Image (cartoon, rainbow, N blue to C red; front, side, top):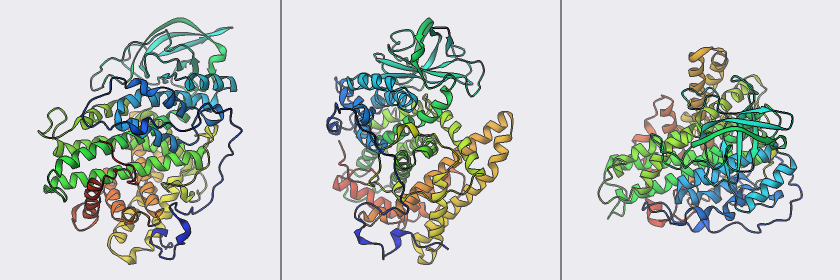
Length: 584
């Protein structure tokens, strides 16, 4: 049996303050001497954006994405503000709450494209791109096309190397970004077949491969601010020094960098979903001081609140991993990319019992943000750094973890909401492999909780749920060799299932770690009720019964519902720390 979790240990040092004490110390990469900073303080304009609750978009919406935002994507040593990904996510959340579609295509796309340059670019490429972003320029992205069928441009964008240049031909319907982008990162095919070294990253200085991009088209199920068709490129020369990294390293580079863009999307969509939850709570509690009278509404609201806390715990751990464990951070980021959009989509469907269908809202409700986010999520799921790419990251990493040595429990700051972290080393992001840090955290948490069963009540329930997820993790590791060796469609399906089930297990580890990291400053987060309800809902996602926490109004469900009602009346947000004032 393990020791008691620190959050349950009354002898815990009271001098820990607002930041949970780390279980282990981990060094961080030193930050090199910065260039002369062109931006002296963080932008404040985004913090004042109203939340998307009435469906109106300011006429000058896109100008909000000028220098104040693009400077967030430039490393501090290049004169920008990017020091840590968790700070960048916090800066982008107000923009996601205001207009998630605008943030998705116009802001995060620039970072997803720029990340490849910060990771593998030459000093000259980094400097030129930094200057462009600091001047308010934005980037477009053409991701690698592998294994796609029924595309109007077979092979996507192709590049043939000549003596003096790469010559581009072809087109794509996956290009993402604003039509006026100053630069475009293109993952162009330089070899035939879906082989590991089939693509090469090229940084173009003038928008899309053949000039200005077409306006975004309205595909079925997608809003206009989503992937759009880039026109044909015909014998377009690109200088050899536009190559980012080595020739043929495009797919590995994409697997290293694109999951972190999706991670920021997931974190921002979770913040936007908190605004939608606020709409639903207001609708369900009109003219009432207490919780909703309708029992089904109460369960839907409390359940979605628990889901948002689980999503925030997972994205928060993945963001902090970029600073604490940059080489191992790709696996948590990819796990979040697999799970969070699915959880949010299912949660918004549950909220339809309160707000009504997206296209036919209930009279008196204010579901503008709800409708817009519901329409945006399919595009977020299918974006260029989407589900397939995240699954492609998860399986190889898990294979390495299953055959490698035991991984020690990670630094406790990985789960502490307000931990002091070292700067992120952008060149090291995703460079390692084989370490499942969230799996190691789950094993440690489950061991400690097993020793706390004697306390009974919700703690005993939480210990039971932790053991269920530990069993699931071990089963995944046992099944992995057979799934990776299986050929054909059956093997592909088995690998997809394992990746999705691992993502759920990773979220459970993040929930437990976040709960254990509490020092008592927030009584709600220190209470095991929210963690028990979140884990029980996660367990249902992998087909395991866990009705106890979701059925008892006097247990975890009641405690979460009480917190939800309290935040409604005190003006606190539905973020995991509840400290950010709600907009709208």
